Image 1: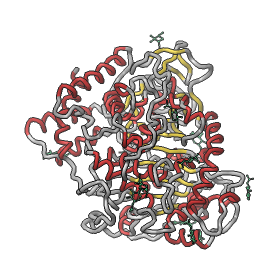
Image 2: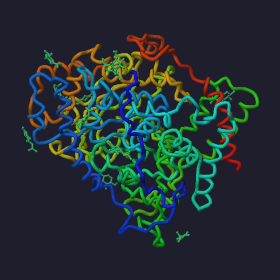
Image 3: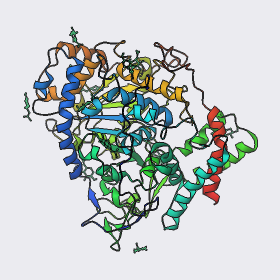
Image 4: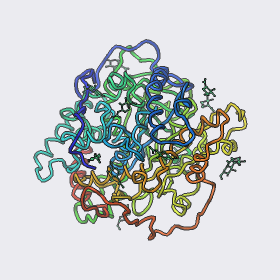
Length: 624
Ligand SMILES: *[C@@H]1O[C@H](CO)[C@@H](O)[C@H](O)[C@H]1NC(C)=O
Ligand SMILES: *[C@@H]1O[C@H](CO)[C@@H](O)[C@H](O)[C@H]1NC(C)=O
Ligand SMILES: *[C@@H]1O[C@H](CO)[C@@H](O)[C@H](O)[C@H]1NC(C)=O
Ligand SMILES: *[C@@H]1O[C@H](CO)[C@@H](O)[C@H](O)[C@H]1NC(C)=O
Ligand SMILES: *[C@@H]1O[C@H](CO)[C@@H](O)[C@H](O)[C@H]1NC(C)=O
Ligand SMILES: *[C@@H]1O[C@H](CO)[C@@H](O)[C@H](O)[C@H]1NC(C)=O
Ligand SMILES: *[C@@H]1O[C@H](CO)[C@@H](O)[C@H](O)[C@H]1NC(C)=O
Ligand SMILES: *[C@@H]1O[C@H](CO)[C@@H](O)[C@H](O)[C@H]1NC(C)=O
Ligand SMILES: *[C@@H]1O[C@H](CO)[C@@H](O)[C@H](O)[C@H]1NC(C)=O
Ligand SMILES: *[C@@H]1O[C@H](CO)[C@@H](O)[C@H](O)[C@H]1NC(C)=O
Ligand SMILES: *[C@@H]1O[C@H](CO)[C@@H](O)[C@H](O)[C@H]1NC(C)=O
Ligand SMILES: CC(=O)N[C@H]1CO[C@H](CO)[C@@H](O)[C@@H]1O
C-alpha cells in the first residue's frame, strides 16, 4: 500500500481531564454516590445505552457493507429494516507481530482506508461493528487506535509522532545512549512519583510508560491520559466507534493459570471486572486506586487517574517472563547472559511480571469469597497467559448478545511463529471448567487438524450450525431460551505478500517491514482482494446474517449454502502429526509485496541488542 495521499490528520488526542494530578500519579477526587462495585448479573447500564445508540449508527453502515458484498437473492435494506446484527472484532496477542498484522486486518475492515470499499475489498465492517477487543499486542493496536481519537491505520502509519517502531522501545535513542537515558529517566520519575504518593508499583508501570511513548500522540506519551477519558471523546459520545474491551488475566503470585482455571478480567472505559464466578463483579474503572471494602470507599475519599491508559495497555501485555524462555535462542553469552538471566529470573521468582492493582477494588465484595477477594492486592497479567490468546471471553457472554465474532489469530504457536488454533482450543475447553459460568463456545478440532486441514491458511467459520451446539448447553437451561453463542469467523495470520511470522520478541521494525506486515494483513482479510475467492465478501455476509436467519426460521440462499459448505468447519478431523517442513510452515509468497524486499524474519537479532537495555531497566527497577 502507498500512503502518499494520507487522509487529513485526525491523529490528535482530545484535551481531557485525565489524572487529577495532571501527571502519572493518581490523585484524590470526590467519591460518586453508592458502591463502586456491582455484581456481574447484567450489562453495565451505560454500556447498554452506548450499544443501543451504536446500533443506530452501525445499522446503515452494515446495510451499505452488505450491498457492496453483493449477496445474491438478498436485500440488506429489507433484512435489516428493523434491527441490526451485533458484530465484534477480536485481535489476538503476539507482540508487535500481532499489532502490525492486526493493523492490516483492521485497515481492511475500515472504510477510512483508501480503496477499501472497492469491489472485492471489505472496508466498512469496523463502522458496522458493535464491539472490538484486544489482548496484549492486539491491544497495543486497539489502544493506539482508541486513545488517539479513534484514528485509522493509515494515520498511525503515516504519523511521525507515533508508531515509530524503527527504534526499539527499550532503546529508543539507538546509538545515542544519552537520549535513551533521558527517556528512561522520565519514565523512572513518573513511576517513582506514583510510588512516593503511596501506591505500590510494579515493572508494569515502567512498561506501560514505555508503551505510551510509542503509542500516544502526546508529549512524553501523555502521562496523565486515562482509559476512562475515552468516554468524553466526541467519537465515543457520537457512537462512531465500536465499544472497546481489553482482556487481562487474574493470577496470584507464584501460580500459573490455564484456560479452565483462569479468571478472565475485562477492562472497558467504564469498568474493570469479570463475569467468572471467582469475581462475578465489576468496579468503576475511573476510581481504581480507591481503598474500598465491598465497593464502599473506606474513609470517604476516592482516587482517580490510576487507570492510566498506558498502564492498562501494559496490564494486558506483561510478557516479561516470556523473555527468559527466549534467552537461549538469542546468541547472547558470557557476562551479559549471566546478568540478563539473573535479572529476568529474579523478576520471574518474585512473580513481578504482573500489574499490581493495590488496593484491590474487589476487597471483601459480597458476591463471592475466595483468595482474590480476601487479598488486599489484585494481580493482573498478560491476557494470553491462559493460552486464550484471542480475547473471546467477553464476546461470548450472553449479556452481549453477539451474533458473529471475527477472531484474528496472530499468535505464534509453532516453531515458525504461525498460529495453529490453540487459542480456540483453549476457549473451547474453558467451558468445561468451573470458571466459564456456563458460557458456551462452539466446537473446534484439535491443533493438528487446524494445520492439516488448512484452517490456518484460509478463513474458517466455527459454530455455523446452531442446532449442533445444543449438546453443549447446560441441562438446567431450556434449549429453546438458550443464548446461542456467536458464529466465529476465524482468520489466522498467513503469508500472502510478506512473511508475517516475525518473532514476538522482535523489538523494532523498519518502515518497510511495518508496511509489509500491514499489507499482508490486508491480503489475509480480503483473501488477496478477492483473487483467491471472488465470493469471499459475500460469504462473510452470509456468516454475519446466519444467526438472524436462524431466528427467523429462514433457510440460507443457494449462494450462502455454498459459502457454508466451503467455509464452515464440517466436523472433519485429521489429527495425525503435522509436517513442519511443509507449505504450512514455510509457505511461498503468492502475491507481490509492494513495499520492498521481504525476507523470512528471524528471532533474536534485534532482541540481542535490546537485552542490554532490559538489564539496565531491570536493575533500575529492582535495585533502585
Ligand atoms: C489489495 O489491495 C490493497 C490495498 O488497496 C493492496 O495494498 C494490496 O496489494 C492488494 N492485494 C493484491 C493481492 O493485489
Ligand atoms: C477526533 O476525530 C473527529 C473525527 O472523527 C474530529 O471531528 C475531532 O475533531 C477529532 N478531535 C480532535 C481533538 O482532534
Ligand atoms: C464510512 O462509513 C460511515 C458509516 O456508514 C460513513 O458515514 C462514512 O461516510 C464512510 N466513509 C467513507 C470514507 O466511506
Ligand atoms: C454481483 O454479482 C453478480 C453475480 O451474482 C455479478 O454479475 C455482478 O457483476 C456483481 N456485481 C458487483 C458490483 O460485484
Ligand atoms: C424484523 O423484521 C423481520 C421480517 O422482516 C421479522 O421476522 C422480525 O420479527 C422483525 N423483528 C422485530 C424485532 O420486529
Ligand atoms: C487506490 O487506487 C488508486 C487507483 O487504482 C491508486 O492510484 C491508489 O494508489 C490506491 N491507493 C491505495 C492507498 O492503495
Ligand atoms: C491451574 O491448573 C494448572 C494445571 O492443572 C495448575 O498447574 C495451576 O496451579 C492451576 N492454577 C490455579 C490458580 O488453580
Ligand atoms: C484515608 O484517606 C487519607 C487521605 O485523606 C489517606 O491518606 C489514608 O491512607 C486513608 N486511609 C485508609 C485506611 O484508607
Ligand atoms: C538455557 O541454557 C542453559 C544452559 O544450557 C540451561 O541451563 C537453561 O535451562 C536454558 N534455559 C531455557 C529457558 O531453556
Ligand atoms: C446441524 O446439526 C444437527 C445436530 O448435529 C444435525 O442434525 C443437522 O443435520 C445439522 N445441519 C446441517 C445443515 O448440517
Ligand atoms: C456437534 O458437532 C460436534 C463436533 O463434530 C460433535 O462432537 C457433537 O456431537 C455434535 N452435536 C450434536 C448435537 O450433534
Ligand atoms: C449462568 C450462570 O451460571 N451464572 C452464574 C455465574 O456465577 C455467579 C456467581 O457464582 C452465579 O450467581 C450465576 O448464577
